[in-house]
Each structure stands twice: as structure tokens, then as C-alpha cells.
Length: 284
Image (cartoon, rainbow, N blue to C red; front, top):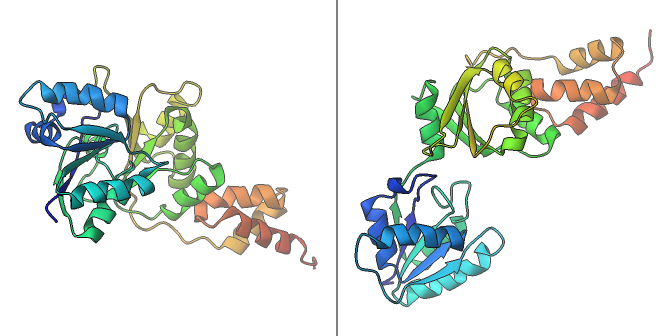
């Protein structure tokens, strides 16, 4: 197959971060598949200012709702020998952004796939956090639903690698509070926002400090959370014993289950059912 799929990393805020190679690929592309076509046109104006542009270049939308169907169209273009560039609104396609379908489809079809690296919010936030970077775990966006989010954090209590999360500004306060409950309020963390832009900020401190800071007022702009890893020696919890203790202390099954989600990572429904069964046990 003569065509090539170019997976192009794009600026996460500052257009000056578009590499010379990325600009050339975008100028020479026959087809640009973009998550946001309006943002893409702004980017292409910047890229086009640096050299000759393919007069036949087309732009098509490629977003979460149509990426499976659009991937077939992109593969057809590759079969015709065209140069196809995939870009997300910001950052690397396929990494918490549309792109995975097109890449997998191109590989399946036998097309050449060429990655053009670019800026990364995850790496920028990690570098600016001052936290250990020898080993890190990228976790993307945490679940929107509180129970699922707390269950996830519970499973990460023993994680030793530095953890990186993307988060929407209006959920930052709740997420930090849940992280503090799961990992302990004294765990070091950093919130990177508006990365590469004029008002870039790295708010560093403990989870408790950051949770208090953003409890009432949400940060502005795109946010990336970096959380220090643990020591790997998180104590084992006797779930039944702890549930019995909470029930004996006056909590109902629902509240007892919710309390243990962030400490164990066990789904709340399972904990609730166990708490109900323990509550029904005959007392001696």
C-alpha cells in the first residue's frame, strides 16, 4: 500500500510548539482528519506560513462519535496512495483523544504508520511537578461517577510509580478529595494547568492542601494532576472486620460500604452486599 498514515502530535496551547516536521507533514498531506476542524484550520494557517501547501489537501472531521466509520474512509484514501494526517484538538491522537481506530485500521490494512511526536500535557505536567519521574503511570481521565472513581483510587493505594491524571476543572476538587481519602492527605501532588499557555501554573503541595485550595473554587483551564507514588507497603485491610467495626459504630451498610471503597478498591455494590449480610447475622 503506497499511502502513509501520519499520526501528528499538535500543540497543547502554544502554537510555537508545532515542530518543523509536523508543519511539513500537514502542508504536504492529501487528507487531514481532525478532531476539531475549526481548531485544525487555525493550526494549518500557522503551518502553511512556512512553506508550499498541497493544493489538493482536504480536511474532514474525525471525533469520538464518528471515528469508527471515518476510519474506513481513511483506509480507502491510504489504498489510493494518499498521505493522510490524523490530528486531535491538542496533543497526541490515540492518547485520551480520537485516533486509535484509524491507527488500528491502517495497520490491519497493511499501510505504513508514521508517528510525528509533539507536545504532551502529561509529560509537561510531570516535568514541572518536581515529583519522581523514573517510573510513572498515565491513567487518563478518572471516572466521572464518584463510586467508580473512588474504587479506582482504592486499587492504586499500593502503586509506587508517580501517577498522572487528566481532569476537567469542575471535577478537580472532588477528585483531589477522593485521592486524599485513598492515599492519605500528606501525599505529595501537583496540579498543572494551562500548560504552555500565558497563564501556565504548577500548584504543588500535599493532596490535602490542594483539595482544600480547590474545594470551593475550580481552577481555570485544562488540568493535569500528578501524584507521587506510594511506598508499596500499603497495609492489607480485613474487609469483614472493618465493616463490622463501622456497623458497630453506627454506620448503615450503605455508608460503611462507601467508606471502604477508597481504602480497598472493591466495588461499592459488593461491599454493600457484604455489609448487609453482616448486619443480618444473629448477635450473640
